[in-house]
Image (cartoon, rainbow, N blue to C red; front, side):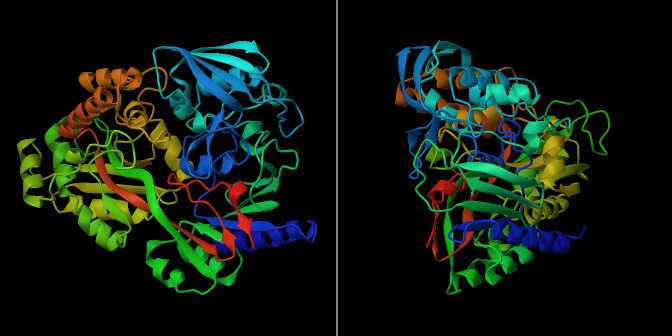
Length: 526
């Protein structure tokens, strides 16, 4: 089915669904370049996925409209000893099927989130065990002191033990292996919206939860989430009024949409850093003309790639100024950012060629590069620009640009030699980035997204110390030391911090979080 036919079908189905609602019902129609790949909240740790499913499912601790920590399924928490946190759970909460929320669901969700196939291990990896005190009280025991534990829980969503068992969904959907279950297409959360209809990669419909335990500040009764991958079609849909909000707005269309009298552009810095990763573990790259050795194991090659990239040119021509070149793997808004480390290595083609020659590749080499085309702002063009830059130093890139539906399973299996990825720190703290992206892969979510297997023993040691340190200065000093090690090793190649660009009708009020999440309970249509 061609895209335009699919979108036309989506609009027809939208009209039919709207006709079934009361005349006073308020419908919000969203257009996005991609889709949540599953309704399973433990299946993929990806921003759009979380943005959608966390309107249906909820964690113990959430962020409020000002992005501050706030009670959700837990009403209160306190550290009762260095390795024990006591959580009081909210009473009177029901899942969408009417069953009560209890401590058993929290313990079940912990076991599920740490099991094979889960993409959320990094959020529960600090937990040693959860002890049930009663139906609405638990003690969470950590392996070591972890003073920011509540900050870690904002993306660990709670599922119904009873529902998962009844639907043979006790294990997460494993995107790496293409395994799906009932939780892929159906949902049973405690959140402010219920899943009503699911058409993957076309449209998903959600209805306001009339029995929600909390306050829904907005007035939206129905959300229709449309997948409109083509940038021009998505912009045309907003201009014609077929959708009410879109994300992202292509950078080349921002100024044009700003001039529209009935539209507004919401912009702000995103916590995400876009970066490049390189396989540093295999003895031979998967997709390369270099046989019997792995060029990325040589720091000189990694640095040559770094210095071959004209990041200011990418900012100017690809991002139209909507990016800030980055030298660290997290932006200034994240705790632990060290300003003195914020200077990138210089763009220098001749220095890059010299490094490659010294490493034994005077004529460069060939390697494939994996990139999504529906995940980040201008993700495909960014990768094309990187490939063009590397061609100037003799590196031939075989660019594999694909939808995130195939891209993520591939790179999460580590079937990649060179890839682009982005990361937002969910805790707004450096430890999240250090543990998930840079630490040597291991148990408890360590290095779960360190897909190139970068490894440095001192960095690992510092990451463990940062996790337990309560003195702010000592902790930040250790973060700085660790990130200096990573920089000196050229463990990854940070590219830039992106800017958020949402387009909405002027009669709509919504909250734009720096992690690019859109919480529908805050949306008001005037």
